[in-house]
Image (tube, helix red, strand yellow):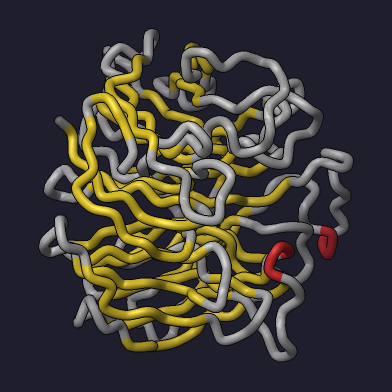
Length: 373
């Protein structure tokens, strides 16, 4: 059992490592980092006695389905080839798996939306529309796309957007040199998409007309900061009289040897002129070079208040108090035990359910179910 401050462990699920944890009602869904496991389905109706009820496998070697979202009886998972899993089998096509999750413990396939290249990396879903990051023929890297799943048997593209320089079929040439410009994943709030774009920074898009997403503003701080942008999390209420967005840079793929990544706080009150005005880093970490996956990774994406649980790679779970956005503080923390077969902790994703339970997923092995004390 790990240790923490203001948090204690309720239960531990010994499962293969994962990229995303999502809880719908009393069912937890884990998207796994490496195949052959794709998605594990865990009954958490008794959180002190979780039971793995089902497991879906990848259809090809060299692939993964490491992201999963569930809403209104529909489960979506990505399907992607990934370098560290090897070359995909013949016949592989990446895309989006769509399931009927009316029986939450036993999802049944409905359809598969296919795309090009490596497939889809990450996405969000609101019960009608999926906001995805597919690779599409004619573009360099993943782009931003909106899919309508009104009829989940026949998903339809609604609109798409790409960063300048991605559309080589349209005569564009890359504008960032050797840096990767690719959509990581879009998040919707109202008629805006907040889109992380790896080494091209991040963008705010106007989707009041979903067929024609348009640029409102964006920002790229890589370089001078060396990390790619992973998540843009708009806070759905004002904090200290401001509209703010948390931006997590991921502690991987650094442009140069550097210290661990951290969390930014951006004022988006004037969305055409967003301004970073504070940040958070764990006490004791500075700019000295560290191994990859030491620093920031991923905040919880379903915001329930001014305490924001964050997966912080080798530093476990950090719960951040953003009630004073100029002075973000650590409200609680939890460090799991090092998983079997690993050299250190690698907390990769986090979710808070309707009961206030926090689920912390390790990239290499294991899921911790936690509660605040």
